[in-house]
Length: 114
Image (cartoon, rainbow, N blue to C red):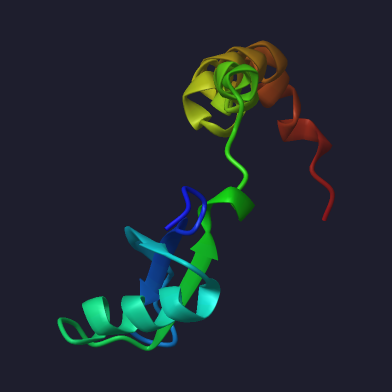
């Protein structure tokens, strides 16, 4: 048996047609066909399964360390949170009080048309 005979595969499955795919386990197999058979034998006996995906680990692209370091910068979604707009109510109230003071409102009394 040569060193490169077995390959690493990742197994994903879903319980129903509408449920998401979930990673289940890794396995060693000589090719895709045997990896699928091994996944079915090891997994389908234990739980109800709608679908199984078997992917060669070398075909899965993982993030590099530099890409992982950029995640906090890319994941900054503070602008989506409304807590940053709490000052607007106070600002609007101040604006209304300046614009509609008592003298302004009382001056409207004589301008009503019928």
